[in-house]
Image 1: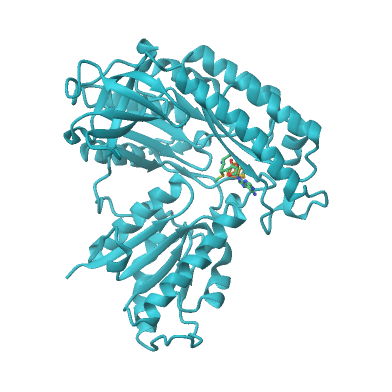
Image 2: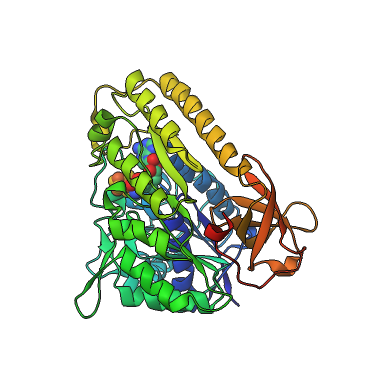
Length: 475
Ligand code: SAM
Ligand code: SF4
């Protein structure tokens, strides 16, 4: 009988990708994915370490799984992802009932770890309140071999309409606030041939939107078998050449990008490639040059403004998104005012903003001039209010326009489906449930802060399954 695998994923889209790959690795051992935690024979918590709150969640979630074990469940508990990488020993000490801890670069070795964990598990049963012996196995190496060469090709679960494809991993940028270079390791680009083959499989399995992923995705520089180095623009062009024909051609996006790596060819690609979504998430973090320098971002606010100008020249309707950190050590009122000004100038379609969270082991955590929590909170409120206004304005301006929508789930009310526009807005639409996975053209009747209301052009089931005109045409 198949054993049931429950994976809980925290954090970024790369973690979503990794969770799917872990399921692929475990499928040949008889593990089938389940969405209900109660059925699980094995649970993997795929964790995020980016901010303190994200990391804390793991320990409280582990408490819940401990109770299941105490109640007699024959359960294997694994912790994966960036908390596993950063705090592997600590997890096994604080939560000795955990069977396995595996870092993001080592999960292709899950079968061996599982075999080891099974041997250990037989030795002791956990009693309520008792201190469990520490028996868990730990693998947080950065192995010399790439995990990508050891992952199975077969997909354990077919992708939904939106699929993720990791093309690059790790980071050499060392922003002073960030744990990623320590938890994910050095920048690594997969060979283009492997990416093209994986894209082929995803398209054949029905994916209609493919997000190319990397912690620094636009730093992609994959070496082909003939020695040629491909850039992200090269890769997007080739994917586009191979998959543009027919009414079910997928649309493409990439995330997350760094301003320093936004080269001219990539900017131009936004004007040239019909199926490249008119959307870009380009984190800036701050609008103050002094803070950008202290963050070691390697660019100033003027360069960021210039990139946005060139992107808009290449693709006038492009929707722009960003990340911001408020309250970085030493951030003054004047620095924060520069961030607000950059936001006013940029006019974002959406954005994420966070209070600075000191991460152990990062240089900024040691800076003396930490900002008070109350000041961080006040700045975050002000920034988020401005970003909400911009988002609501961007969405409201869509009323009367036609957008391309990829339907990906059922809505709350009967007869409603939800999807995303190619500008990454949530769209509520009336369409038959058979439409999930379809791309359609829809006319926006209203735009609100968090979603658009739209009608399929020509009626509820008129253009299901058809290709659609590009948003640039519709804009
Ligand atoms: N590679 C991307 C880049 O260059 O900006 C970002 C990767 S990070 C996973 C996602 C976002 O988390 C960052 O853009 C930043 O805004 C936020 N973040 C990272 N470290 C943080 C920290 N210590 N405190 C608060 N936010 C943080
Ligand atoms: Fe972190 Fe900076 Fe690397 Fe982005 S570029 S992952 S923020 S170190």
